[in-house]
Each structure stands twice: as structure tokens, then as C-alpha cells.
Length: 239
Image (cartoon, rainbow, N blue to C red):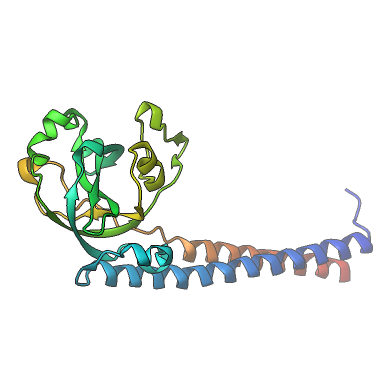
């Protein structure tokens, strides 16, 4: 095989060094993401174990944001509108079934959706849930503030016309149920038992994938390999 010309080796060496710089930048970015993720996990852990506070009222809705509010423990008092309940498909540690999202009308007339919990597929009919929906008086709800999940799930879009919900899309559910003045978030109810045992609350999974260290080490390893390859090419050029 013919030897590469000095010019070709020079170009190859430069390209390898450029790759090394890119890999170093990507590794450094992953390290920054690692510390961001660790900080996020710490903040969320402090929120879910804190004493509950009142759910953000109407005047606070424009300022509610995922970064500072999601997974806060909150409370709300009002009247459930069981006739406007929506079922969202779910897979939990208890198997496949549905999340039961019911509008809660607050004292000021505004509404927020409450994920009252999980029901298995064979217990999802209104008749099967009747025992937990007969109470017509005021209720108190405690749980975790969650942000809306617009659009649907992976490869599955919400279909309001067919009553097929794959994500807890607050605005879409509100529109489909004819609700107005609805909070831009919903509440995942805690494990306080419901009458009749259903729905089952307290099944929120608080977990964050954190592979940034592995990604960072991978990018740094590729940077080292690029530098080594560049050195080898350079050494042969000088030989």
C-alpha cells in the first residue's frame, strides 16, 4: 500500500486533533449536565418530603414552571366533578390500567385536575368506581404538583373524540370535558385511601435517568484515542 504524502498526513493529524477538541467539549458538556441533574434530584427530593403547601391559586398560574414547582407537595380543597372524569392509560407497578383524572372545583370557581390514582383495566368502568365517587361534599386533596403532559405518549397521540388518552394533557382534557378556568398543572394524589379502595393513589414514580457520567467518560475516552491516533500519524510523518 502506498505511503501517504506528508500533506495527507498533516491533514489527517489536524482532523484528529479537531475531533479531540470536539470530544473534549462534549465530555465537558456532559459533566455540566451531570451536576445539573444531581442538583435537580436534590431539589426534587427536598420538595417531595416537605410539608404540603396550598396549591398555586389562579393569580399564580402564569408563574408556575416545571423547574421550580414540579413535585412540590400541595393541598387543595373543593368539590369533585365525577361526571367529567377522564381515564388516561397507565402502566404501573400494579399492572396496566388507567389514571383517573377528575376535575376539582375550588372555592373561587376555578378548576384543577386531580389524578386521583390508578384503577386496573377490569375495574375502570364507572360502576366499578362508584363506591369512590358517591361523596358529593367538599374534599381535601394532598399530593404532588405535576405539569401538563401535552400531545400524548411515544408513538401514540391523544384522541379526545374516541376517549383515548395516553398522557395527562391538562388543556386537551379540559377542552374535551367543557371545563373553563383550569389550572395549567394537575395534582397526583397521595396514598390516602379512597372509599371502596379505588382509585389507588400515591403511585407517582419520581425517578430521573442519570447517565451523564458514563457519557462524559465515553467522550473523554474518544478524545484521548483521537489524540493518540494523531500522535501516531505525526510520529510516522517524522520517521
